[in-house]
Image (cartoon, rainbow, N blue to C red; front, side):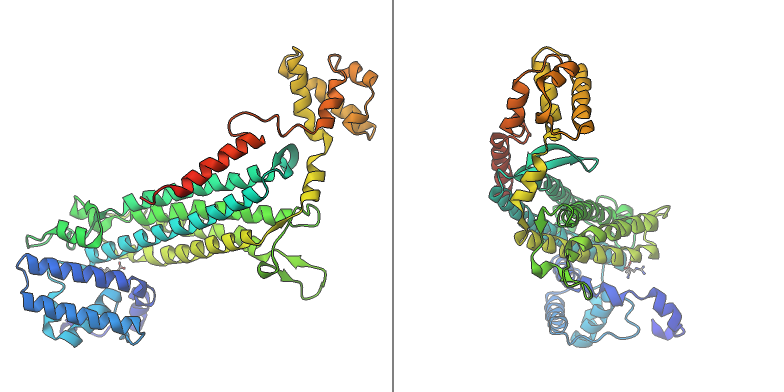
Length: 456
Ligand code: ARG
């Protein structure tokens, strides 16, 4: 083709070439090319000898890539052209037969679908590891009281196990989102050709089976323009990274001197170059900060796809860098979150002291009134008065006298003091999904069960 064309402007090459990043597709491209050439031979489109030569040549290319001996040439526009060029150098003109009944348009869509599938599986494995870590951490801190918060104000005490398991279920939903990515990548694009189909009666189902796809894309125009599976991966990754960011943010807060609830292991923190007393939770801070970057990759691809007419447009080459960066960022964050949680320590006394703040029992006092027949709304107002009376006098709730109590909330009696004394606020949360120990044990059993589920 070069004979008929003027050499390309280097600036054009700079914007047009994708080899600098799409080399990551190489293993999938080789696998795909093997399956495609086997199909061509089975369908009588190339001979058995051609197939054997192509297979040997592709194997040689694969070894060069794996052993880092593969050299890219300046006019290798992308990984697909580079591999085919090298195949032809090694195997001779027969290498040129590989691209029969195929276009780079269906080829690249197939490679990307294969890569998304591999990394969805990878994310699922990493999520399972992290969920296992969370469950073990919850088991080790089953009955450690800690304040539960709303608006970052102490609200009601919970067990630390319950608090930690909240993240387990967030990660469970992430896992389900990556499961969906497996479905989204199940239809083979290959065989769609450039856009309209190809001039040979190929067997797409054979290729699908060779490559582990469940079926074939029904419409050739859709097949070459579809990048939904990249959006799906990025959306799953963005939500997952956001959960990791919430976890990171909470660890940053909890490891501050003001909270003093937890401490991140030395291996995941840094000291200050100036202030010798400091131990900074850097890894948690970075978990907190990485999420918007992944979300940004999702938004970037939505921007690329927005308003694109059918079918393949070069714009679609811009799917790769956001995807690759999101994959690398998410996989790193998942590994870091697991390892950091393995080494985290909690301060039982600090948390217990914060959780035994009597004001936190206000809801329980209100419920005591409810059991005495007071409508909840009225009880809520009465307890608000009790809390204010205590706060105004700088007293704990239990330091209020019975007279003071009765003046504000007449139905209250000695049981008020028992309730505060018992510290029974946690064990009273007996509803399903609540924090009482029996319920947390149930929850742990369910979580264990999720981890034991077969990996479909
Ligand atoms: N490098 C291209 C991409 O990533 C491959 C497809 C090129 N197809 C084409 N008709 N130029 O999208």
